Image 1: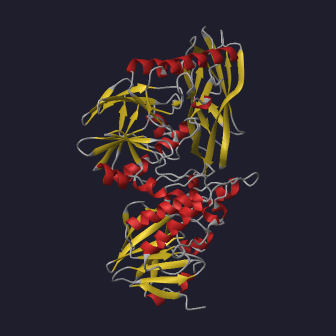
Image 2: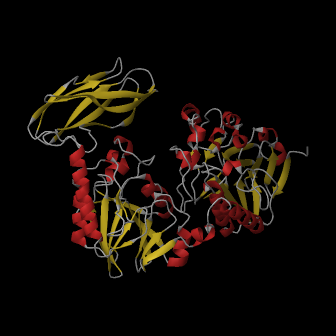
Image 3: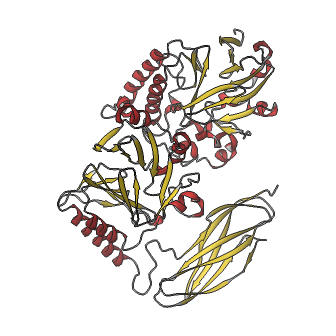
Length: 613
């Protein structure tokens, strides 16, 4: 084998190991940083590179050949920085090993090629931004493909732009592994995203590509272009019709009107309202320019990025993305909001019924939540109208798809527009094919919600309705009447099927909820839980709520008896002293009796008890 260390650019060294480890020496100093770490053999060759110590290691992705030696880095005091999407596969990889489905498994991502044990993570790398590590400025770009969360690092050195591209590309037109790009059964998300990432890097006009496996590439435009060409053919070979991936990236927006754009490439449709000032407002922003989502609900399966923004500026004259409005809290509508704020300085303005869910998602037992809190810079009152540049926008409560949703009414280019999120599938044709009302009971839907939304649509009489997953609906005669008929059918079906009468159990049958639903509490400390109880009868009742706790835990009070008005609700607080030993997802339930109706242990919450130290 050749000597493992070679200088591939001034002050940049490659160490051959389980992968190529690159050391970048700080200008004028004797410290350096590493891109990837392999087995750690790099530590044996620092002197050959004129480096006394490494200050930081930047990981391109989570695979074991990239980082199996990271415990040695941690022991040497080297700070470890990882891609945001994949942090859990470094810092909490034991949880992946503990919970990863193995039986009847359709998730083909190579997350099991992760570290065997966790390593301490100093920070995640800031995508789309430059940060200095050990005196070396590094720009971070998302380049999904080999893994969902992969990144590329750009470093300027002696008038050259070097791209440390991980396993995105092996050589001109080649990848190190096609298997790694196959994220799910029969689908093409990974190969298609690799094509997108090639285009992203080509737009940066890098001077050289430094891959994790393979040789340094001196003609990146040719190498990446050839890979994109070959992988497009590969993707098309597994589809019934060709997929124009380049157009999806360079021209993702379609005009609904000249100043209202629809991003046709995002998983949930996002819309851009463009001001004559050049400022833009996003309405919903989840998974931008996506080729599909792989199986799994772990963070490492979900990739927010800002791939459509260059086209927004280049083709539509947008100078800034000032504000983003979410219609509701579901991840496919909000996953990219924090990144948009961090990179673009975008403010998040949320309807008052959505803002609390975004701010504290795990307080609520709701589906489809994003992993992190999304704070709102402004809270918009329901029923109120606000002004943004030349536009006046009215916020309407829009329950149905979920209780925590809003519609936005505005006029753009002489057209009255109503943005409705996921309320109904906008595919129906009056007299031929119905719309499908998009309700899930765990989102919390009430009997008259669709009746109320149909009345709202009639009152506003929009010219066009834009939705979360379907093409814009230009409202033709008979469409609003069809929605009214479907709402009445919804009511009739549920009245026929559910108990009803003097016992209103609601659509989901839930009469009590505990908040926070998931919390973290230090051992031997006290946490407060709020139990919300609803009366399903029209008469005043007495509600009895008794906490059901793990052995050794205590609640104050140990039982609560409260008056409950007919058809009304009440909140009851309990202070719970948790046990002395760490425990994952300890169950706290409440036994509920409402008058003569004994619901039993009707609601629960989960508590992670952590070491108090």
